[in-house]
Structure formats: C-alpha cells, structure tokens
Image (cartoon, rainbow, N blue to C red; front, side, top):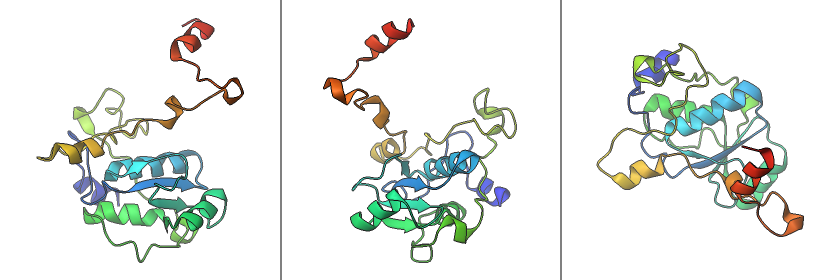
Amino acid sequence: MEDEIALHYNGSSGHCVQGMESVIATVSGYHGLERFKLIKLINYTGASYVGAMAKSTTHLVCWRLEGRKYELAMKFGTIIVSHRWFEDCVKAGKRIPERHYIMKSGQQAGPLTWEVPDVGEKGSSLARKKGNVLSDLSYMCKPTRDAEMNAECTWPASSLLSENLYPALGTRIASHMIENFYGS
C-alpha cells in the first residue's frame, strides 16, 4: 500500500487530493501513533484537520461509533466515515464518494495502513531520516494556477492560539506575559 500511495506523492512540493480542499475533519477514539498517522493522512490529502467538533466540521473519523464527538456529529449532521475513505481517496488521487464509508468505524475498517511518506533528499533534515514519522510536509500542496486553492491546503490557524486559557479572569493572557512568566 505504501508503494501505491507513494505514486501519488510529490515529495518536493507536497500533495493535495483533488476535491478534498473543502473537507474539514476531526477524529475520535484514535490514540498514539495511530492518531498521529490519521491526522497526517487527513492533512496529506489537502483536507483540514481540526481538534474540536463544531458545526463547521464536515467529516468525523471514529474508531468506534460512540462518544461525545460522535453524538455531536449526529446532532450536526456531520458525515461520519472510516479512515479507509481518506486512504482510498489518496489511492484514487481524487475525492471519491463517501457512501461506502459512511457510518463505518475505524474498528470495522481495520488498522490504518497509510504510512507517512519518505520524502527522500528533498525534504528537511528531519525528513531525510528514512521512516522518521516526525517529518511534516502535510502543510504543503502541489503548485496550482489557483492561488486560493493552494492557500486552502496550508496549515489552518490553531484554535489553541486564540483560546481563553483563564476564563475566570475574563481576559486572554498575551504571549509576552507567558514568556515573562516562564522567563523565556
């Protein structure tokens, strides 16, 4: 499978699967390396990964069809798919219909088989180490004539950066205050 996926990967400029730019996905029930690989897979396709379930989330990938995110997805009408949908979109090189993957859990689909691609010599120094799962090119896309499409495939802004860490204080802590606190 890794060889099949590698055929669709452009190591020097990243990868986007045609049609995945509008997908905003979150995951539930995956842990450790499996969760890391799934998030990388989602970003690799050109979809956006978000950590929290929201009305704007278009897809939920569940290990089991249970839990808080699952309940919210049912309430919001979010599409619930197995991780296999993302893997098969990569293999096809385009977004494929979700109908065969809807309401299937990761547990039903079996283990995640996608591996973070080895980018070879063209990647960063971290990426040059074969098999290093910390290499990260998921924020990159193939060059396109449409600059807007390319912009949609970049890392989304982290919600953690704007999160109110101390709601009882009624104010956000500025980064310079945190730096002063920790003596950076």
